[in-house]
Length: 496
Image (tube, rainbow, N blue to C red):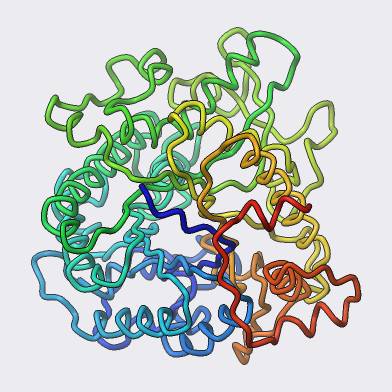
């Protein structure tokens, strides 16, 4: 991967920001359907309007332009492009929307960094085919990706096939918190599902679908488009709860069961040995052809990192909440040791301010995968209190400390090509609805007006490499119109 483009960038996901959920030929997605079920989403909210990015994308591009970001990571709505899957026709108005989005980004010097699948898929694929539990979804996904490559690949040079397949497997099929809401005790009380097996099946199909899509891209599109393609995993860092060998071993298992579950197959062609040891024959097996497809099927690794947790061994110690089961790696995670949090709590239960975890997780990926090119594809926080979201000094402190940790990893040789903030603006945050805010811009739920938070000004000033201490001066900076495109991430964070 020769392109060394680096920078501080912004991102959003289609289901969380676009709205226009049935406009211009878009079909019903699994999340559109799921959010209509009472009790599934905080305040019974939904993404039908969200941030109305579909109609306000030009305004939002100006926001990114004013921040000085040089890339925008967004996802394509599968249901907007193929409302009925591969048995139906392509929705031309969906293609037109993403073409306009891409063209206007490029006109402002902002690189489109496109995620093809970010949790949402046409509801018909869930009802007709069984979603990711069915091998049919592999062909459906390849068909969808081919349309994306053909329609947008002349201008898009960075592709992510699937965002966080490990988290989708966990929340959709283990805990039942995401559609299709499958689970079984002790992990949840769903109407259907098998938490011990279905996460493995869903992940297996997603990984093979990824490999099939990459083979198609490299065979038919790369010779003319010359793009780069990768996959993204949600990546907690872990530390032993007790200063004991059994908990240090449990940390290794936790990393394998969460991070390497995604990356080992696409780099080396098979699941981590740690998982095979725990699961035995329950872990699906790749055929020889599938291993060949998977091995080396990425040009870069995407790391979504937010926090660090303690790990307790459950092989030699009693554990609650299913930690004594193979699907969990025979371990239990917690954010507390003797009642003391691992870091300052944030607005989500498992997310703590633990900056050292950024350096550690990047070093883990560097060591395990021979320093393959990496992007930090998500990093951000929601505040513990949201009484005055515009004065979000705690969010600034979060990003300062995590970027400083990332800088240490880069100085130690990690090949990190860029950093994406989650997120540009407050949006629909999955099962948390609008109760959790990660954005640099505040979005008024009544008017949808975007207002810069203090953190937006800080990022704008940080990108310009200026150090402002005056709060009013920082806030004013968020409205500047100068775009700064820079190539060396470490040059910006090294001063921190």
